[in-house]
Length: 132
Length: 119
Image 1 (cartoon, chains in turn green, orange):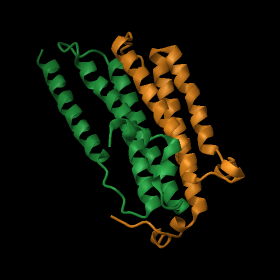
Image 2: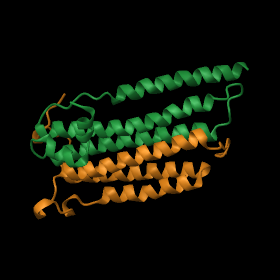
Image 3: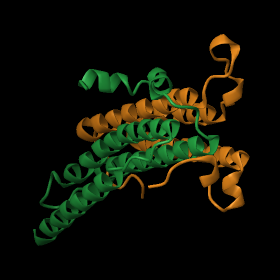
């Protein structure tokens, strides 16, 4: 499957048409939608945290790029998470329509790995800043 | 892994009521709109125009959550499938968040910082 056809499969007009199967129980569609919205809020929280770090924190003494090192990846992760949340919603909705088992999600892993990475960078920046 | 089906909705009476599920989803949309407003308020502190744009998205998100699914006419006069209606709304939310994130990225990289602005 090429990238263009993968992207086309994510368009709203194709989700319903390509999925086949039957319209699932509304409760499952609602639950899937709420999960998407919860991930969207997480994405927004990451964006606001990143922006807050870059724009509102005082600079770290001795580490001039410290705020950008912490904030920019958070904002980028927010955008990635929003797209991933939509992709997951489409996959889950297709599975619901076809009566298949729900696909495994990689989003918690992505989030955990990135937050761990940011925490390590934050610790290093703070240590360097304290030593100067 | 669970297999979805009408008989697998859970033992909780609330889980068996689609009306309450709709209400919980509506509240979830409201929380998302509030999250947009909060982000807009924060950005307002550092960039007025961008903050106003993001703030303006909040009521749109709230309104998207209030759209009555059955009231939207589909092809041949029948209501469209729920999946199709949801897909359009969720696609719009995704596009909004990616747009807002890109704006914030530009502000973060190029904008003048205002340390201590929240004090």
